[in-house]
Amino acid sequence: MSHEQSSDLPPRVRLAHSPTPLEAMPNLSARLGGPNLFVKRDDCTGLAMGGNKARQLEYYLGQAVTQDADTVLITGAVQSNFVRQAAAAARKCAMDIHIQLEDRVPHNDATYMGSGNVLLDHLLGATIHTFPEGENEAAADANLEAIADTLRAEGRRPYVIHLGIDHPPLGALGYIDAGREIAQQARTMDIAFDAVVVATGSGLTHAGLLAGLRAAGERAPVYGICVRRDAVQQKARIERRLGEVLELAGLPQDSANAADVHAEDTWLGPGYGRLTDEIREALDLAASTEALILDPVYTGKVMAGLIGMIRRNDFKKSDNVLFVHTGGSPALFGYEELNTAIPR
Image 1 (cartoon, helix red, strand yellow):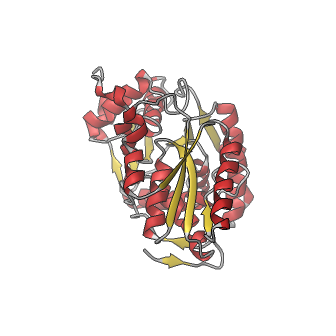
Image 2 (cartoon, helix red, strand yellow):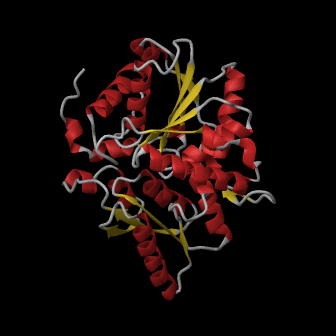
Image 3 (tube, one colour):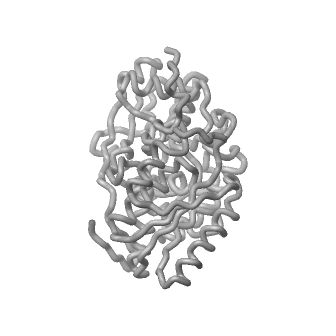
């Protein structure tokens, strides 16, 4: 782990194994009858079983180190990948970690509440708090700040990772890095991508990736598959985030604009973290064709979206389409219903 300070960008702590691989998926392409499919393997970032949050946490922990924090706080769903990787990042930086788990998904069985990411949270020694209002982002942030105030009163130096829309999108800088990385790999492999497909939730990965690709001269549309909100709400969120991250990174505001923001909610289903038949099929197809292990909350939903877009002829058979694998496989083990046979 190394600490970097730049005069132009916020401080950064190296946490992710990068660059991550960019690979073809010929078996899945053949099964679906085209287009040419590729995967960006951000499930391979390391840091407690990998995932996209490692890139974002490089900037959050960089700021925490600079502020001489001794404790990191974060909030997320019970099976949150961000929470799990934040706990790991805090430990790598020799800090304590307090996590707040929000009741977003109508599961209260022992498997969901104690396995998967929650098991890893415990292994990482996190102090766990719970919050009942899973869809009240502002209230969750306020409760997290109250926990931080208690720690300050005890003489601790907490650093709060805020993911709400009213806080700067610091973590998105990690996906500007990823966008540039993808552009470089595409040039090395002599590939021109016609589309990129990625999960869109908090918006940091989506907005940062779009900004990074545009900054690197890549013009392929970036389709965000909604995992929590409908397309209207999510598009507005990404448009706001995009302007903020361009400013934060010192990039021209005309590098990307609202016309570049695509949000697709056809595969949202009943909501965040809820399984659908399309997600089950996506999990099965990715694993059985490419040995690609997805999760039921983010990447499974995105793969369901990609499969659906192919089936409704959104792409030409000759197109090159990139699927961004943001990790999350530990959450698989929190879903007891996945023990039932997946139809093939």
